[in-house]
Length: 243
Image (cartoon, rainbow, N blue to C red):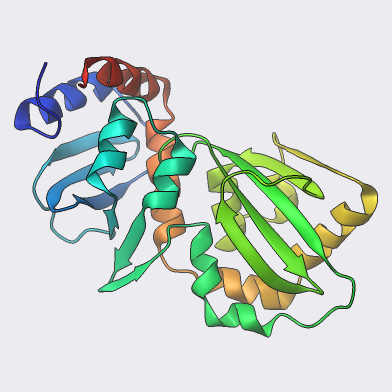
């Protein structure tokens, strides 16, 4: 079997995802770095056109991930939540968490108004993430953003299950929150559901969403491409062949 991240490994990876697309608008140029091991992946309208060692010109962003996490992911031993939690995104020399947690560093998030008793814990479960399905949660206390992390949380007030690109669509003003849940599912009691809707529709929160950088759209497109049947099957085969 070819050595992980060797030229032969990338050749096999490209072979396994050949035939993907077309998928309108699902394009990206991503530079990866795993403790100094560098590779890139490029897709155009759903088709993977480049996936090889080395650097790519004019990347949309650089994604840094520990080598052991990347290795375990491509062996099928690390899921989408673990990989994203370990990642850092670099855009214009600035390092930040990957979307959706990139909103945590947006200054506009501090402008959310104080709302007594507007306290909510929401669990998000996304399909078609950049490295497969992933989970994260976000808590608000008195209307203000309190804490957010990748993973699962106990006893959430609301559970939102939607494709990752739907969340990004809301944040970029491409779709409404009501369009985002079409084909998805939102579970919770009436009170928390109404509170979540109110928070999501607030101008202050939407200003924070719009202030997020390119991480969301780029990673959503990576998710769209790699969630295609040929790519998911290809990754499964690649995992079985990666030691």
